Length: 454
Image (tube, rainbow, N blue to C red):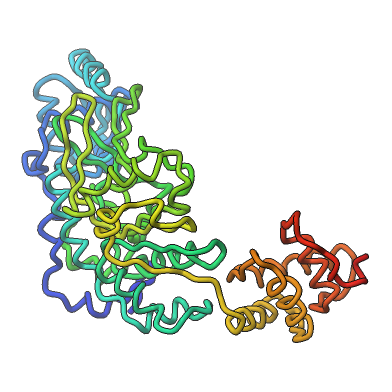
């Protein structure tokens, strides 16, 4: 049995009790939500202030609480003369439509002054932390067969999968380094796909501490899924304040700033946005092109040297109050710079697995060309390939073979032939023309280039 998110449910459906079940039970009692009742009531006020007339079903839908809880709270607010029934839509109070009274409107304006947040009722930060710790241990083993299959389209050294697979199952940290163009980012993306193919996770739409709301769910970075009903049945009547998502894969490159790793306060809405590492919890966080960020490697490493050791991170509210939360994701650093110039021994020691992604040798380069020739429907020409090796690599003191070059050179050939109307080919003359377009080498002597290019 496979859910729509792509993971196998057969082992899960037989479980007597999922470890997340105690955290996910729905309640009809506001006191059992685990947060101050006043914070919940403020959300009711703000929704009424914005929409003027709101049904019980609408409260349940927007705030992600049970209709019965909404009905009970609204009945209490009605007794306190804060809301009134605008219309009745049926035979019982669950069909009522409410609006604010004059006294209620004053309360609602006060609530809007405190925050503009309207959305799912937040979850307590301690419960959130417990959920991350539980779900970081429920990934399930990613088997060698799965890793090998995911990487079968890549030409890699023997046993390369053993190191990547070990990092995936450890779920801690991985350092990918080596020359550019050899698949480091592709390998990281494969890791993300492998994690996403396991059991999904629950994350709260928002969390709260000290009356402040922190938005955790991000529609741009989290992909909601609809698992099989059999899998969902083990949780019973579920608290809808939790989204069900694929294990996240947060990827950043040169645009990363230190501010992305701290709580971001929105002064208009008076709400906090969770940092990237919090959004990545339970999944993967890739720092691509490490060393080329807008913050220095030293700053980034100093920020994370303690979380890597303790698996706990701290962020601060504007008031200075520190919030502790788990640092539980597969953290991947990918760089084509010299690791010894980016990080000291103390930091590298805290990264569990280091993998060098080397450029291909001539045999691997040959295999890559044959694979991409099939993909792009260009007949492989052994003479042209030997010409490429001899004249564009062996005769160069600086140029190194890269795993991406066969694809890129063939794409250049296709672009040239599309323009000229020629049949795509790998003849020596076409190889030279494509390489002249592709490589940048201002100082190289070109006396050996085929006469057909002169």
